[in-house]
Image (cartoon, rainbow, N blue to C red):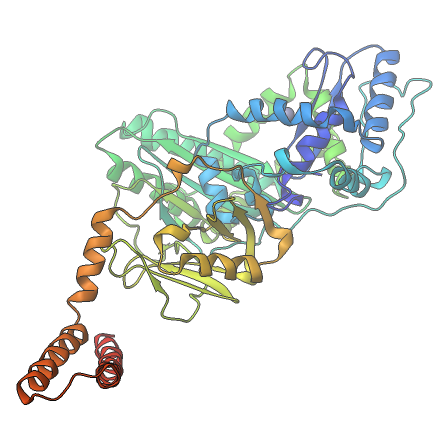
Length: 529
Ligand SMILES: [Zn+2]
């Protein structure tokens, strides 16, 4: 059970359950704790056999009989915990690669924390906290009296990390200033950890030592499921040298995939260095515990557990060609975050679209601010599209929407599966309330996330100058001038001819002119398009 199993409206539910299961079980942080990652939730403790037995019994009991009286208190605790975290490059890469969906939820706010009720949490526990979905490991023999109070229940497979909101790879997007980073999804193999090691060495040699354009390039490889893992490479960049640093970073990725040994490609010496680093780690006193924890992880994902000898045998068999092949896979599936001041990478790199959905058809409503004359908001039952100028668009299709954030004052933020966020402020669009009504009517109810009320001064209002300029635009339209001139002309004709001015005749003539004017205005508008 982890964040990748959740949805945007339920994001954080595993975290909430983890806190509730640990409530009252020793002092938090002393010798026991819990951890939720993308696919696994871990409870761990250190103690004598009796303490361990008590801990496991208490945690598994509270996973099944969730201490609901503690729910509101833990909401606050988690909010405090979240407030201390700042989003990094990994957050941005996850949002672009996976959207607001499965593995991308690690990069989104945990909206479920403040709002999910006990029943939903209990149903979540019922689905995941079961015998076939859990593995226990111990550093010693099972103590007498060990009991796990988990019910029967099936294995819950994790989502497929190959899913992406991006249509094509390799692709890039403008990331944060001062750094460059890449993320790839790879099949799991020893060659993947070798690749992570070699990539780090190459980035340090090239960016820090040779060119001095960076301080601390690094890599991070993590298995996500039984079959796939993800590799992140990243580096800070010396200010003013982002262009050179970004190009060097990309060249290292490309050379590992395509260059011959000696020209930047992977060599036997690279792998010897990797094996030496592994041997050093194997000598660590904590290694047997790490192996046991890893074995539990593999068991959970239905993979064979390898002992140390077997692992070393597998590591010895890795060849430079294996790593090169994986480096090609990594390059072909790479998402690159480029600092805004760097150049766009050449083909085959493509610019990742800001919004992956096809725009919905329709002319749309204009923005009330005349400063955005081309902005249009199209809201139809199938989805909504926001255009800020003639070309770029943000789209959320109803069928692929991750969540709709709803404020009491009518503001809506529609979050598409690719993590595109579209804000609709009803006060800023012509007939904005009607747009909000369409959203409320056609977007599924289970996607709703109710947000706390805003202070009245936070609700944006069209300013007076906008209104005046809008009136001037209406008044200066051709048909209004034609209409006014027509009425004035008729009045002159009638007055000079001495015919009495009856109300009925005035109304008929004004009506006729209005019809002509409105038809004309439609024609004018159509011609402009
Ligand atoms: Zn926590």
